[in-house]
Length: 110
Image 1 (cartoon, helix red, strand yellow):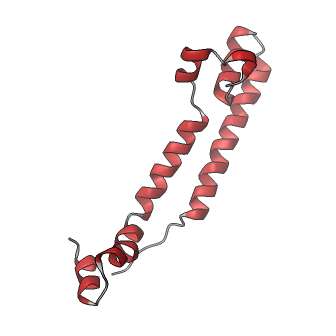
Image 2 (cartoon, helix red, strand yellow):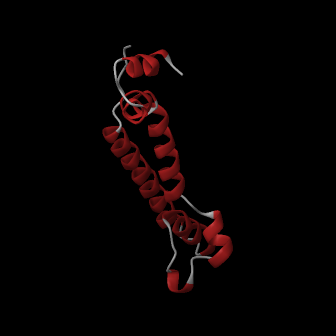
């Protein structure tokens, strides 16, 4: 146990309340980084969908990454494929900024 957690227990917090007031704020940066990595990984998901369905029936499971690959390398439309990759980067950056607005980085003092 950390000293902050023990101090909160001595001050009268229960274990459940001490977890929400001490442990989760200390894990804020880790939770933020995991959220960023998971959502960006979900946005650019390519191999599983492409191997299983190649975009699905009637392009039902297209993602920006699959659209980028299909337009660039199968249809030889490199302009559209590079535009799709720029959109993929912009979406990833927007998600990153949104998560950092939800989990602001601040210094914790004991």
